[in-house]
Image (cartoon, rainbow, N blue to C red; front, side):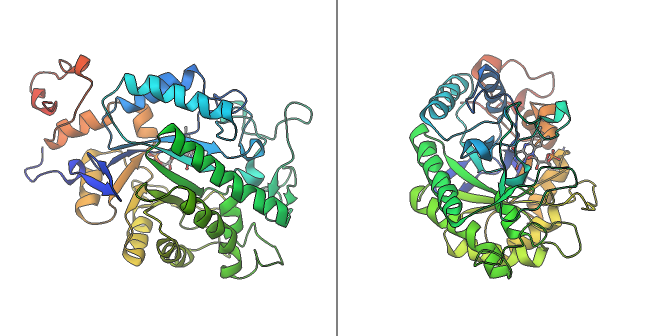
Length: 370
Ligand SMILES: Cc1cc2nc3c(=O)[nH]c(=O)nc-3n(C[C@H](O)[C@H](O)[C@H](O)COP(=O)(O)O)c2cc1C
């Protein structure tokens, strides 16, 4: 147990949105929707995540059009049925958990769409088996053997931008607290950023300015629709980890541009554009990227990636590496990770009142009084 007050459990504000701690549940695809609609799986899953007593819970990458899904089982927010299914699922989950802000990650899979879920190999959906034509900045497959996407026309760009805006409006109607645009992991908007995937010869390719143009147009349009004070952020892949690809320096310049457009936070991930990536995996391996983005942009940042230990998470917040830490696999492994982190660091959490007797001998002080 530490002697100083744990920073991990100090409050934070994303614009006007108050977070009770610095712990974020990272977006995690569940591949369990039907026709883009949330199912019973999501209701239970969201309830469980919301019972974790994190400061902010993300709903998974949620497609803004049907062809923007990664798999046929990906969640969508592109029609009334999708909107109703998320609203209903959230109402159920919220009834089973203490109040916690919920954010949604809006996404388009680009050339990495029309795949099977990871548990079925993550390969291209067989032709005629519910597959679809994928779109991307350029007609370049992600890897040899993958279907070649169709290069987007000007009209496609407008439609995708408008789909992001429409999804943000639906998110507002549902009562979601924050939106994150998915600019990472080699999906559509990241494909525009990276010179490895974007070989366009029009105004949306070529130079850094050309490659950031469409993602920034999407951001600006969503910012207009998702009006302040609601926080709007972006998840980036801060580097492609490939020579000749998108670099950390590019990310720092992008973050400054996003800030000027009213971005409220940057969630700093990496990789995903190229199968040639060489990622130096290790505890907190992306933390230095978050630190650099935070220093260059002065924006709140989320650090993510192999942050598993409460003392590690607390130390990186205390060191000013990032403002928030996101956990993905760690929360699936231990869905009460924040409770256990509070016990380890000598902090307090609000738990569902039905569970207030849960704390074992010696840890009773962890459960905050209402
Ligand atoms: C099951 C699973 C689903 C994921 N889905 C998404 C997603 O929807 N959007 C996203 O940006 N990252 C996604 N990720 C990546 C995580 O959000 C996170 O960045 C990554 O797993 C590293 O964090 P970790 O070491 O805490 O797991 C997913 C990861 C996992 C394990």
